Image 1 (cartoon, one colour):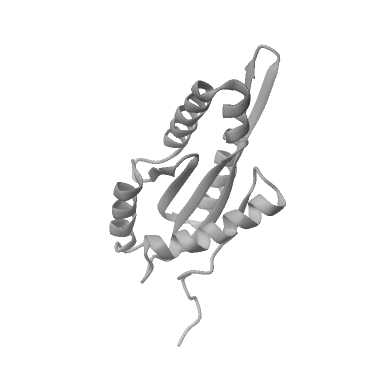
Image 2 (cartoon, one colour):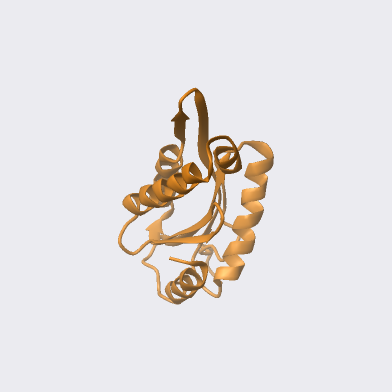
Length: 163
């Protein structure tokens, strides 16, 4: 799915009610060492890596989840209406699956995925709101420990306090 279709689909899902105790999970997934893979092994290997990453993400996801390519080696993953615990476990497992070694003759390049993640109750938030928060989380990961992720629940998290 491309960015425009993904944005529209996610905005539509954000308008839907969540089950009690559930959140929407929005992640920007950026591949680490992708440029190195292209430079060292060639663009055909980069194309192969992109296809493998998409296949891994789609196999990992539920039918209602959305995977869309933002461009280059960046993707958005949207996991609607699941518990925070289930979302965190799902992303932990996916992160491990996206550590992939490519070997060509005596050359080896490992790619991984850095992820900026936002958990939201979906009320009064848009794709753009989630994107901006997740992008900040992603840059924090890229500066500190590539191949990992950072989760923010800053936007629209369910308020459990009473009035």
